[in-house]
Length: 322
Image (cartoon, rainbow, N blue to C red; front, top):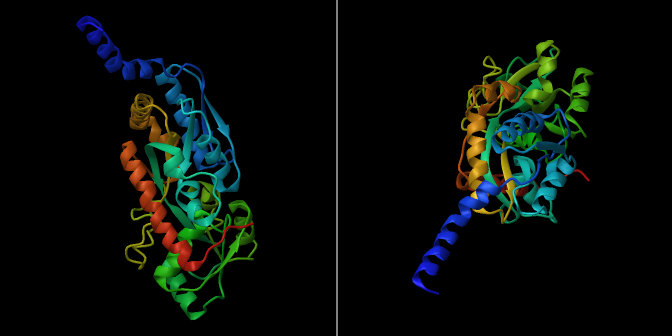
């Protein structure tokens, strides 16, 4: 190879990543929401699909692949072709909780998936029926200490994020309240209104209609900061449990091995979409805040959350619903 050929070859190598990014996407993109339509994951997916389609010049089609607390949809992306045409709206349940809850999980979040960017950080909400005698979380803690194991709280299932959020609260507050798992938060709320249970831990968007109608009362949000959607509701930490901060979150991931130029371009388009003024309005129902992160920051976040919840799950010997 002569000097001219060598320079040409080097130029082709240097220019290959840029060319790859420009060539992608070459067909419609699947945006996988690992939960049923209507939930928080859908808020994110529906907004992002429109903005990414505008920025990338290809249709972005939302597909709901619900099941096993988000594990089925996450596994689908973990086994997809690593070409950037299948994207996941990932969340803390299947990425940070499932590895410690399920002994035979079919994927490893940081081995089989490539984090792209965090998107949101949002609270879980503790609610009671208006007939419940407690007016705030301090009152609940006092009642629970006076009557250990006499109160019941519902969640959308053992090992769900709202369940573990409340178990963390119980541990830090030193109280004993019996967990009653349900197959869906809506079923827990029905029993709350019927007086079968006294409390429910769930997502903000799930319970907002009942809050607006005055059918339930909010005691506290799980995040360190108050929710912009519910500014009058104090945090758990403000209510006497110092240091408590348990957010839910969503982020975007692709299959591990996806070329870096594609990851970088996807990250750039997501950053643009999340910086738009309409992003907050579109996802305001989550009751949290919008985030931006690098792929490396998101990977570190998943790893940190995984270790945090592994300790709690192991300490309390929590097993998922069969």
